[in-house]
Length: 132
Image (tube, rainbow, N blue to C red; front, side):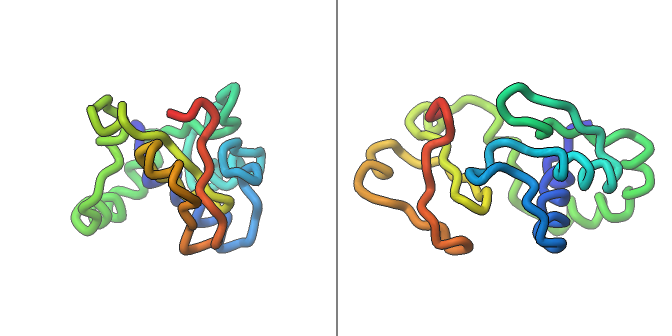
């Protein structure tokens, strides 16, 4: 089962432990990310350009986290699933990432007007390889 919030939980665990789990641009997920994700019970696969990024939630892990998953689904109202489907907005925007790994989509023309700064790491958002 794909469950992006658990992928993000591995990043949060890395942050709490002050572990660098991605490349400097936050694109490539390293072995440390893989170990943390597996510690949370995720299955992690290797992607040629993203590293150890693709994660799935095995049924046995989902069962053990069932109460937490139910509480998260009730509490969290924003869902990233919309990012995965093509839309007019997606076609007119580009994906960007900052040093701490936060990602945004922004119109290319808006990005061209000047740097867009991250409020967490104070670094500018840069185009992700491929720009889309």
